[in-house]
Image 1: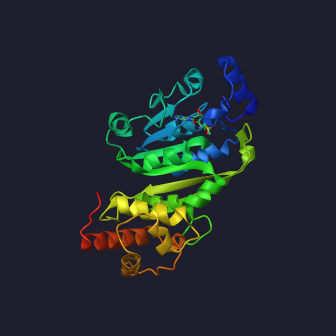
Image 2: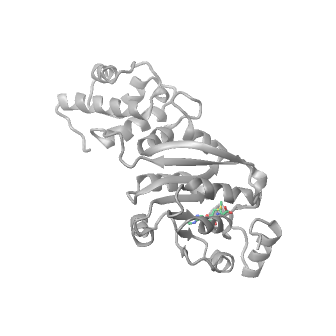
Image 3: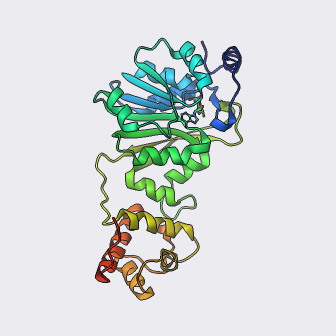
Length: 295
Ligand code: SAM
Protein backbone atom coordinates (compact mmCIF):
# COMPACT_ATOMS: atom_id res chain seq x y z
CA UNK A 1 0.00 0.00 0.00
CA UNK A 2 1.47 3.36 -1.00
CA UNK A 3 0.34 5.59 1.87
CA UNK A 4 1.66 8.72 0.16
CA UNK A 5 -0.34 8.22 -3.06
CA UNK A 6 -3.20 10.79 -3.10
CA UNK A 7 -5.59 8.31 -4.78
CA UNK A 8 -4.76 5.70 -2.12
CA UNK A 9 -5.28 8.21 0.71
CA UNK A 10 -8.67 9.19 -0.74
CA UNK A 11 -9.66 5.54 -1.21
CA UNK A 12 -8.76 4.64 2.39
CA UNK A 13 -10.74 7.60 3.68
CA UNK A 14 -13.75 6.90 1.48
CA UNK A 15 -13.81 3.26 2.59
CA UNK A 16 -13.78 4.42 6.21
CA UNK A 17 -16.51 6.99 5.46
CA UNK A 18 -14.39 9.91 6.69
CA UNK A 19 -13.24 13.26 5.30
CA UNK A 20 -10.25 15.51 5.94
CA UNK A 21 -10.86 17.37 9.18
CA UNK A 22 -9.40 20.83 8.93
CA UNK A 23 -10.17 21.48 12.60
CA UNK A 24 -7.59 18.78 13.41
CA UNK A 25 -4.97 20.23 11.06
CA UNK A 26 -5.12 17.23 8.74
CA UNK A 27 -2.67 17.59 5.87
CA UNK A 28 -1.24 14.20 4.99
CA UNK A 29 2.17 13.69 3.41
CA UNK A 30 2.17 12.72 -0.26
CA UNK A 31 5.92 12.71 -0.94
CA UNK A 32 7.20 9.29 0.19
CA UNK A 33 10.75 10.56 0.73
CA UNK A 34 9.62 12.93 3.50
CA UNK A 35 8.30 10.47 6.13
CA UNK A 36 11.43 8.36 5.63
CA UNK A 37 13.70 11.39 6.15
CA UNK A 38 11.85 12.54 9.28
CA UNK A 39 11.91 9.03 10.75
CA UNK A 40 15.62 8.70 10.00
CA UNK A 41 16.40 12.03 11.67
CA UNK A 42 14.51 11.52 14.93
CA UNK A 43 16.74 8.99 16.69
CA UNK A 44 20.20 7.48 16.48
CA UNK A 45 19.47 4.16 18.14
CA UNK A 46 17.23 1.43 16.71
CA UNK A 47 16.43 0.50 20.32
CA UNK A 48 14.64 3.84 20.87
CA UNK A 49 11.06 4.40 22.00
CA UNK A 50 9.23 6.84 19.72
CA UNK A 51 6.06 8.75 20.49
CA UNK A 52 4.29 9.96 17.38
CA UNK A 53 1.62 12.62 17.70
CA UNK A 54 -1.07 12.56 15.00
CA UNK A 55 -0.32 9.52 12.81
CA UNK A 56 -3.08 10.39 10.30
CA UNK A 57 -3.30 7.42 7.94
CA UNK A 58 0.11 6.15 9.06
CA UNK A 59 2.75 7.15 6.49
CA UNK A 60 5.28 8.37 9.08
CA UNK A 61 4.11 5.75 11.60
CA UNK A 62 5.11 2.97 9.24
CA UNK A 63 8.61 4.39 8.76
CA UNK A 64 9.00 4.67 12.53
CA UNK A 65 7.76 1.15 13.21
CA UNK A 66 10.19 -0.19 10.57
CA UNK A 67 13.17 1.50 12.26
CA UNK A 68 12.65 1.62 16.01
CA UNK A 69 12.06 -0.90 18.77
CA UNK A 70 8.85 0.57 20.19
CA UNK A 71 6.42 3.11 18.78
CA UNK A 72 3.24 4.63 20.23
CA UNK A 73 1.07 6.81 18.00
CA UNK A 74 -1.57 9.08 19.58
CA UNK A 75 -4.40 10.13 17.26
CA UNK A 76 -7.35 12.34 18.25
CA UNK A 77 -9.60 11.51 15.28
CA UNK A 78 -11.52 8.31 16.02
CA UNK A 79 -12.41 7.99 12.31
CA UNK A 80 -8.73 7.31 11.51
CA UNK A 81 -8.34 4.46 14.01
CA UNK A 82 -9.85 1.76 11.70
CA UNK A 83 -7.76 3.14 8.82
CA UNK A 84 -4.58 2.82 10.91
CA UNK A 85 -5.64 -0.72 11.81
CA UNK A 86 -5.57 -1.50 8.07
CA UNK A 87 -2.41 0.39 7.17
CA UNK A 88 -0.08 -0.27 10.13
CA UNK A 89 -1.99 -2.81 12.25
CA UNK A 90 0.53 -5.51 11.36
CA UNK A 91 3.40 -4.01 13.40
CA UNK A 92 3.80 -5.81 16.71
CA UNK A 93 6.04 -3.03 18.06
CA UNK A 94 3.38 -0.35 17.46
CA UNK A 95 0.48 0.75 19.68
CA UNK A 96 -2.09 3.24 18.39
CA UNK A 97 -3.98 5.17 21.04
CA UNK A 98 -7.16 7.12 20.34
CA UNK A 99 -6.40 10.12 22.55
CA UNK A 100 -5.89 13.87 22.60
CA UNK A 101 -2.14 14.52 22.86
CA UNK A 102 -2.91 17.66 24.87
CA UNK A 103 -4.43 15.49 27.58
CA UNK A 104 -2.37 12.28 27.49
CA UNK A 105 -0.31 11.68 30.62
CA UNK A 106 3.10 11.69 28.90
CA UNK A 107 5.06 10.48 31.92
CA UNK A 108 2.74 7.51 32.32
CA UNK A 109 2.93 6.77 28.60
CA UNK A 110 6.74 6.70 28.60
CA UNK A 111 6.81 4.54 31.74
CA UNK A 112 4.28 2.08 30.32
CA UNK A 113 5.59 1.71 26.78
CA UNK A 114 9.16 2.99 26.90
CA UNK A 115 10.45 0.17 29.12
CA UNK A 116 13.60 2.16 29.95
CA UNK A 117 14.48 2.90 26.32
CA UNK A 118 15.71 6.28 25.14
CA UNK A 119 12.47 8.17 24.44
CA UNK A 120 11.97 10.63 21.56
CA UNK A 121 9.04 12.41 19.96
CA UNK A 122 8.51 12.45 16.20
CA UNK A 123 5.55 14.19 14.56
CA UNK A 124 4.10 16.09 11.68
CA UNK A 125 2.33 18.43 14.09
CA UNK A 126 -1.19 19.70 13.51
CA UNK A 127 -0.76 23.43 12.84
CA UNK A 128 -3.64 24.63 15.00
CA UNK A 129 -1.91 23.59 18.23
CA UNK A 130 1.79 23.61 17.36
CA UNK A 131 2.85 25.94 20.19
CA UNK A 132 0.70 24.44 22.99
CA UNK A 133 1.83 20.91 22.05
CA UNK A 134 5.47 21.99 21.87
CA UNK A 135 5.22 23.75 25.23
CA UNK A 136 3.58 20.67 26.73
CA UNK A 137 6.40 18.47 25.42
CA UNK A 138 9.12 20.88 26.58
CA UNK A 139 7.67 21.23 30.06
CA UNK A 140 6.89 17.55 30.46
CA UNK A 141 9.14 15.70 32.83
CA UNK A 142 8.53 12.49 30.89
CA UNK A 143 12.21 12.17 29.97
CA UNK A 144 12.21 12.71 26.18
CA UNK A 145 15.70 13.27 24.81
CA UNK A 146 14.62 14.98 21.60
CA UNK A 147 11.63 16.29 19.66
CA UNK A 148 11.70 16.05 15.86
CA UNK A 149 8.69 17.87 14.50
CA UNK A 150 7.38 19.30 11.28
CA UNK A 151 5.92 22.77 11.70
CA UNK A 152 5.01 25.69 9.46
CA UNK A 153 8.12 27.15 7.90
CA UNK A 154 7.84 30.51 9.67
CA UNK A 155 7.38 28.76 13.02
CA UNK A 156 10.54 26.74 12.31
CA UNK A 157 12.35 29.99 11.59
CA UNK A 158 11.16 31.47 14.87
CA UNK A 159 12.08 28.42 16.92
CA UNK A 160 15.60 28.26 15.51
CA UNK A 161 16.41 32.01 15.34
CA UNK A 162 19.26 33.60 17.30
CA UNK A 163 18.99 36.66 19.62
CA UNK A 164 18.52 39.89 17.69
CA UNK A 165 17.31 38.12 14.53
CA UNK A 166 13.97 39.21 13.12
CA UNK A 167 12.29 35.87 13.86
CA UNK A 168 13.62 35.61 17.43
CA UNK A 169 10.71 35.67 19.88
CA UNK A 170 9.60 34.80 23.40
CA UNK A 171 9.11 31.15 22.42
CA UNK A 172 12.70 30.99 21.11
CA UNK A 173 14.10 32.26 24.42
CA UNK A 174 11.82 29.88 26.35
CA UNK A 175 12.77 26.92 24.15
CA UNK A 176 16.44 27.68 24.85
CA UNK A 177 15.74 26.96 28.51
CA UNK A 178 14.85 23.35 27.71
CA UNK A 179 17.16 22.47 24.83
CA UNK A 180 18.76 23.36 21.51
CA UNK A 181 16.78 23.59 18.29
CA UNK A 182 18.05 23.24 14.74
CA UNK A 183 16.33 23.32 11.40
CA UNK A 184 16.71 20.12 9.39
CA UNK A 185 14.95 20.61 6.04
CA UNK A 186 12.14 22.36 4.23
CA UNK A 187 9.02 20.58 2.98
CA UNK A 188 7.12 22.46 0.24
CA UNK A 189 3.34 22.85 0.54
CA UNK A 190 2.92 20.63 -2.54
CA UNK A 191 4.04 17.59 -0.49
CA UNK A 192 0.68 17.43 1.36
CA UNK A 193 -2.95 16.53 0.72
CA UNK A 194 -4.89 18.81 1.00
CA UNK A 195 -2.23 21.34 -0.09
CA UNK A 196 -1.77 23.92 2.72
CA UNK A 197 -1.17 27.63 2.09
CA UNK A 198 2.40 27.66 3.37
CA UNK A 199 5.56 25.55 3.30
CA UNK A 200 6.70 23.52 6.29
CA UNK A 201 10.04 22.62 7.79
CA UNK A 202 11.32 19.89 10.07
CA UNK A 203 13.21 20.90 13.19
CA UNK A 204 14.85 18.87 15.90
CA UNK A 205 15.08 20.00 19.50
CA UNK A 206 17.65 18.17 21.59
CA UNK A 207 16.50 18.50 25.17
CA UNK A 208 19.06 19.01 27.90
CA UNK A 209 19.34 15.88 30.07
CA UNK A 210 20.00 18.36 32.86
CA UNK A 211 19.08 21.98 32.40
CA UNK A 212 22.16 24.20 32.36
CA UNK A 213 20.12 27.13 33.72
CA UNK A 214 18.90 27.44 37.28
CA UNK A 215 17.15 30.80 37.70
CA UNK A 216 16.52 31.80 41.31
CA UNK A 217 12.90 32.34 40.37
CA UNK A 218 11.30 30.67 37.31
CA UNK A 219 8.39 33.03 37.72
CA UNK A 220 10.67 36.06 37.29
CA UNK A 221 12.59 34.36 34.46
CA UNK A 222 9.50 33.60 32.36
CA UNK A 223 7.91 36.89 33.41
CA UNK A 224 10.88 38.93 32.18
CA UNK A 225 10.83 37.14 28.81
CA UNK A 226 7.11 37.80 28.49
CA UNK A 227 7.57 41.47 29.38
CA UNK A 228 10.54 41.95 27.02
CA UNK A 229 8.73 40.49 24.01
CA UNK A 230 5.29 41.81 24.90
CA UNK A 231 6.61 45.27 24.13
CA UNK A 232 9.35 44.60 21.62
CA UNK A 233 9.95 48.18 20.60
CA UNK A 234 10.44 49.42 24.14
CA UNK A 235 13.81 49.50 25.85
CA UNK A 236 14.41 46.72 28.34
CA UNK A 237 14.02 49.19 31.20
CA UNK A 238 10.57 50.33 30.02
CA UNK A 239 9.42 46.82 29.12
CA UNK A 240 10.37 45.48 32.56
CA UNK A 241 8.62 48.45 34.11
CA UNK A 242 5.36 46.88 32.95
CA UNK A 243 5.94 43.81 35.15
CA UNK A 244 4.72 45.73 38.16
CA UNK A 245 7.70 44.70 40.31
CA UNK A 246 8.11 46.57 43.60
CA UNK A 247 11.31 48.28 42.38
CA UNK A 248 11.94 51.91 41.58
CA UNK A 249 13.08 52.81 38.09
CA UNK A 250 16.58 53.40 39.45
CA UNK A 251 16.66 50.00 41.18
CA UNK A 252 15.37 48.33 38.00
CA UNK A 253 18.02 50.09 35.95
CA UNK A 254 20.75 49.06 38.41
CA UNK A 255 19.56 45.42 38.29
CA UNK A 256 19.69 45.44 34.47
CA UNK A 257 23.24 46.77 34.63
CA UNK A 258 24.19 44.21 37.28
CA UNK A 259 23.05 41.56 34.77
CA UNK A 260 25.54 42.96 32.24
CA UNK A 261 22.96 44.72 30.03
CA UNK A 262 22.25 48.30 29.14
CA UNK A 263 18.82 49.59 30.27
CA UNK A 264 18.42 50.95 26.72
CA UNK A 265 18.89 47.61 24.96
CA UNK A 266 15.85 45.95 23.38
CA UNK A 267 14.85 42.71 25.07
CA UNK A 268 14.90 40.84 21.76
CA UNK A 269 18.71 40.99 21.83
CA UNK A 270 18.91 38.83 24.98
CA UNK A 271 19.69 35.12 24.90
CA UNK A 272 18.13 32.58 27.27
CA UNK A 273 21.24 32.80 29.47
CA UNK A 274 20.94 36.61 29.49
CA UNK A 275 17.33 36.32 30.73
CA UNK A 276 18.47 33.98 33.50
CA UNK A 277 21.10 36.53 34.60
CA UNK A 278 18.55 39.33 34.34
CA UNK A 279 15.89 37.56 36.40
CA UNK A 280 18.52 36.65 39.01
CA UNK A 281 19.53 40.32 39.25
CA UNK A 282 15.87 41.29 39.66
CA UNK A 283 15.51 38.61 42.33
CA UNK A 284 18.52 39.94 44.23
CA UNK A 285 17.28 43.53 43.95
CA UNK A 286 13.92 42.48 45.34
CA UNK A 287 15.56 40.55 48.15
CA UNK A 288 17.48 43.69 49.04
CA UNK A 289 14.10 45.39 49.18
CA UNK A 290 12.90 42.44 51.30
CA UNK A 291 10.37 41.40 48.65
CA UNK A 292 10.89 37.81 47.59
CA UNK A 293 8.49 36.51 44.93
CA UNK A 294 7.26 32.92 44.79
CA UNK A 295 9.74 30.78 42.85
N1 SAM B 1 1.37 12.03 10.42
C1 SAM B 1 0.46 12.23 9.29
C2 SAM B 1 1.25 12.66 8.07
O1 SAM B 1 2.39 13.14 8.26
O2 SAM B 1 0.75 12.52 6.96
C3 SAM B 1 -0.63 13.25 9.63
C4 SAM B 1 -0.16 14.62 10.07
S1 SAM B 1 -1.45 15.82 10.17
C5 SAM B 1 -0.54 17.32 9.85
C6 SAM B 1 -1.78 15.99 11.92
C7 SAM B 1 -2.44 14.80 12.58
O3 SAM B 1 -2.60 15.09 13.97
C8 SAM B 1 -3.82 14.45 12.07
O4 SAM B 1 -3.92 13.06 11.90
C9 SAM B 1 -4.76 14.92 13.20
O5 SAM B 1 -5.98 14.21 13.25
C10 SAM B 1 -3.89 14.68 14.41
N2 SAM B 1 -4.21 15.50 15.60
C11 SAM B 1 -4.69 16.75 15.62
N3 SAM B 1 -4.83 17.19 16.90
C12 SAM B 1 -4.41 16.18 17.70
C13 SAM B 1 -4.32 16.00 19.11
N4 SAM B 1 -4.69 16.97 19.94
N5 SAM B 1 -3.88 14.82 19.59
C14 SAM B 1 -3.50 13.83 18.74
N6 SAM B 1 -3.57 13.93 17.40
C15 SAM B 1 -4.01 15.09 16.88
